[in-house]
Length: 414
Image 1 (cartoon, rainbow, N blue to C red):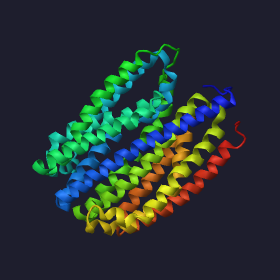
Image 2: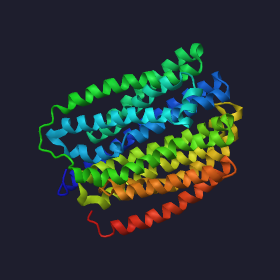
Image 3: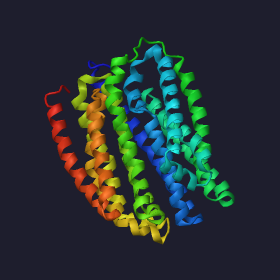
Image 4: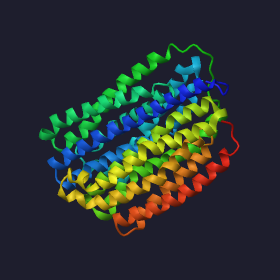
């Protein structure tokens, strides 16, 4: 698609972009619901302390996967649409880099005393953590690959089947294996999904016959040098915060916080991937940046603002599902849901920077958000105070971001 496409073609492509965004958000929702159901079962089957240690294991696994992906997930959203017949070569290089990154990251994690302690206290220990982290690194990367290939609507199918398999494994193994069954319910479906999707991706890549281009070394450095630290900051934001809470307030407090934080991260991820088709379209059609950004922003608000409002109203009821002790996190959940409202503007701006190849802008927004969250988690006297501080920080950042977007897009063609 080019900047000279007819209005009718652009309207149809806009509908397709919206459908892709909804598919990716639905995929995140499916994963979140399955995750919540899994943790509900775990909360019912295991003591809160065991749930706290298991959640720390999973947080460590996700932390390493995000770091070890090397920032290639966001990058392939921009590179894959341009690869053409060179697509198999690009896929070989990026998959190999992600696999090596996963292996290195997992080994480093278990060699660090704090990481080894997290792995050792969970069922299965260090030797279960290594394959779990490597497999999840590749699994996470594949969603971006499918989106960059124009197969965003495969993502909810993949994650839906993964979620179903995960719950089946949990139901079968948790009653007999306890905490180990909880961890295996993550690991076994992940290994199967990685094997199946990898085969499908590489078979589909063989048919590309249009001319294409690969990013040269300068393009790689310009995009990855700033965006990779930004990606690490997202991983820190999602997965390091519960580990800090575990260290400061104990396993039982972390069990409640982890449930709330997981729900917030699920919404944040759903909104993030909703914006990914904007990145793909801006890469292919840079002449219509303003139109694409305004349209995506409106649809982002249309989809997510009602969800945030409903979540706030039902916070106590939703947490009651996990057990009476988890309702203590209801006020924190409401505050963090409110903080997601300005966060939508930040996520839209991140998509704009990535679509236009401005890695430094991506890194800055991710870095500022993560740094604020980590500092608040380290210094605030309670989990509730952490939420209030994050709410204020997100509103301030959103104001800055919206003013910057208004300046950048002023006068851009539609």
